[in-house]
Length: 166
Image (tube, rainbow, N blue to C red; front, side, top):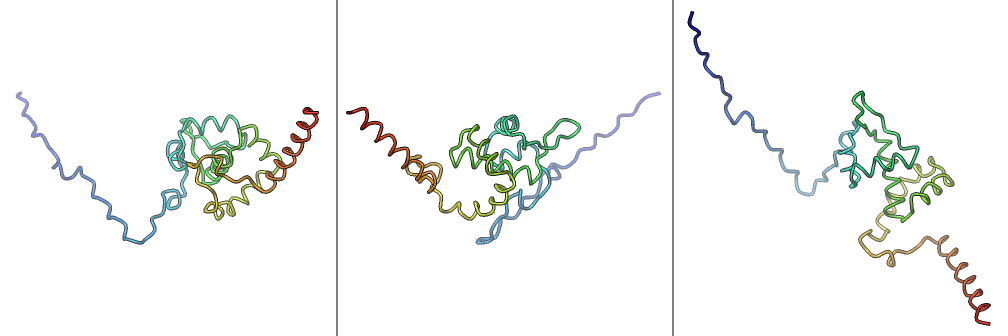
């Protein structure tokens, strides 16, 4: 018996092309993916949303015990919206406010995580008042409490210098 060759079925190339999304209308605000889609994000998407590298998120998980994303059966990290809020808090403390990791841990321990999360809404409204992070740290103004502590330290140092000069 002779086998007959089957004709090869091919798809037209146009079927493999995705249609383009229409451009957003001018003046219409475009919502970010995290605002539109409240689904959990994998580590890469969460890192892009926070504008950090994925290894930074993994490191923060080792340093801050409250950062514990859910893991899938295949060990993929899935960040819920609450996890992203906590990560934004950590990023703000480390990258914007200039805390060290030890300092951020101490600040969170003293202030309380719940209070900091509640204050996160007021932080978003105060963002416009902040000096952009690309400016030198000398251009940033310390908080009023930090200014009073600095003034006390300066007075102590002046008194010590006067004692040493005598």
